[in-house]
Image (cartoon, rainbow, N blue to C red):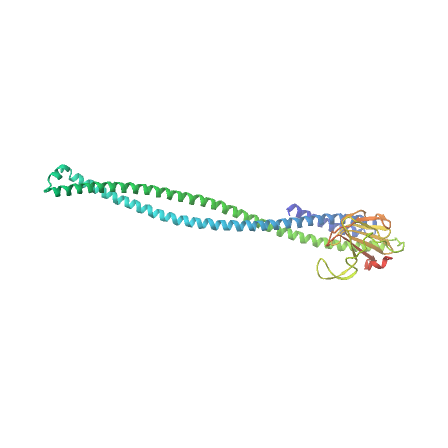
Amino acid sequence: MKTTFKKGIIALICILVGLSSFYTAHANSIDYKRNQLQEIQRNLKSAKEKLEKTKSEKKEIMQNIARLDKELENVEAYLNEINDRIETLEAEIIVKQNELEEAEYQRQLKYEEFKERFRCMYMNRKVGYIQVLLNSKSFSDFLNRIDIFSRIAEHDQKLMDTMKENEEKIKVQQEELNDKKDEVTLIKKEQLGVKYALENTLKERETTLKQLNEDEIAFMQLIKEEEEISKKLEKEIIELTRKSTRVYSGGAFDWPVPGYYYLSSEYGERISPIFRGKEFHKGIDIPAPKGVSVVAAAEGEVITSGYINGYGYTVIIDHGSGITTLYAHNSQLLVSPGQVVNRGDTIAKIGSTGNSTGNHCHFEVRINGAHVNPMQYFSR
């Protein structure tokens, strides 16, 4: 979350704590308490929306981290491949450098040999080719001397050809060496770019993880404050009920979800579908499709209509004589605190908000704040 969100959490906490102290100071004003309870419910709704947004962002961040981890694996594999290629090229460059040095050495040897041939020819320039032949002692000697001259000429030609080949070989090897050096330079430049991208990716991940940890701390702090405010709210509801002058009109309750009579969870001990441990279920669960109407079990005054931690969007009705009914996990609330409702009036729509595993109405009956089995209040 951003800093502004954290500041918003702190501000919200301060408001909630301030309101708690403020409405406690006005305990004799029931109307004022109801107004403050309504304000708390709005703030809790806003807090819950922020918490849901935090969860969504956390999920997105975790997906980003997974993506970054995959990218890092690919980058590291590519870096290893580049490093292997660089080692191969550097080895080839060493070989080419040695071949170049050998070619230059051979060229120098041939050059020295060629210089020696020309020096000998210069030293013997006064002795002509015809004279050497005419000084032959015999015809056989004459033929031998012609053969020697031919071989010398052939050797000189081969020497010239060899020098030319060496020059070409040196040129080709020099070009190959330069190509290899250029390839290494290019790959090294590419490697630097990959390393830079890797560093940025690592930095991004570290920043993301740091932000995620900070969000987790803010998330846990907000949950703690919500739970504390919820407990205070429940105490205020009990206090309001005890002070109520309303008298229960009597008679059995109407079924809170007309047309849907199956119970997915009854009143009493059970295994929690959320926490998987044993718990005491304080009401009954009536499953129904989302949006189905939830009705008031009897006439009374709405004392709570808002979001309560765990219960989700909840309506609590005071029927008088210390009797209250609670309708939880709604998707939509249709009444407001202080509103008087009649038996069978639609007060909410079925949903699955709060700690819930599916669309249903969690229905409770309380006598002076203590929960009782709701089934004893129905005629069926």
